[in-house]
Image (cartoon, rainbow over all chains, first blue to last red; front, top):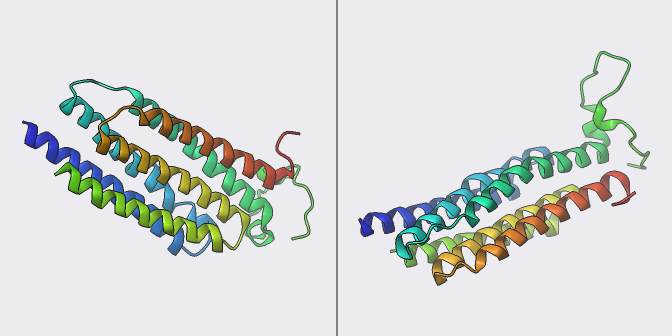
Length: 123
Length: 89
């Protein structure tokens, strides 16, 4: 039983590190900002998620105590990751003229809500 | 077995920290740099959780929780600054 638990912990640690590495490679290799946003989400969800599961399992089997800190960290990360990705995408759309010209027309009088109240910049 | 896995994982996370630093330095736009900082905070959280497993102590969870909060707040602050030219209007 203990060997199985140790094997599972080791496998989860390796999976987590692999996904963190994949996220950073994606951040470096992908060609533009909108595509680069996609890479680190793997590190946030799968990488940190499996590392935290490994940590929970480790403390449960080795020290015999259940810890709920990991669930707190997971919950916080899963709540804040979409918000920060949305903010970065919004900032990128507002900053680059090329990205703004690529937006399709809304078909109504009002423009895209992202561009509402955008200050004029010399871009 | 956990020790060997932790060493490999620490090496992988250090490599990803270096890759993220590369993007932070050579990012063509400011939003790329903000994204790289966000990823840097995420990788640091992973490293701290890994250290918690290696040293067998539960003291590191507060550190990782604090890093998560600071990373989120700095990302939102930087994006707000890029969007509006001001953090708190």
